[in-house]
Image (cartoon, rainbow, N blue to C red; front, side):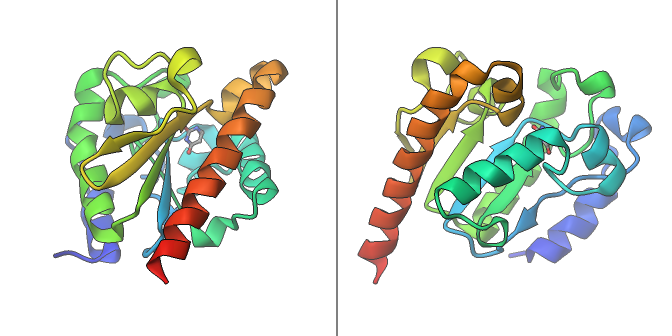
Length: 188
Ligand code: URA
């Protein structure tokens, strides 16, 4: 079994799809390598591509606030994306790009072995929960996939575009915190 650092070296050399041609940096993901909870976004944006770190732009700042509001520190969770290289002009990743990159996310999940996986937005949920996932209808619902508890909530960028969605996102976050506490209490 690889370590996350070994996998990272491998992913940094990836040329499996054409996103490698326009990237500045590969954005592998970051956080606690033993996190009980992982947050998975869609793909790096402008600032993530420049810095090589996930969720550092405006949406990232909001994600930090959302996590903080329910008592999670960024360092205690793990944050990554479906695709590790920025799609040009922040378009959604194409299916073949996501498919090729999902191998890396599978390895990350295997190594980290979280109990909870939170999909941030529809692109993430369609890749990880159900290919026809409807974010407005299915967000906030818990799914069990193998040994993982999975849930999707709105992508923070969607909350920046439409503040009215924040009420539901807040409900989802409290549900996520509750599940996390239940799981952690059962582990002791
Ligand atoms: N949006 C995402 O989906 N991921 C990031 O890392 C940043 C913005």
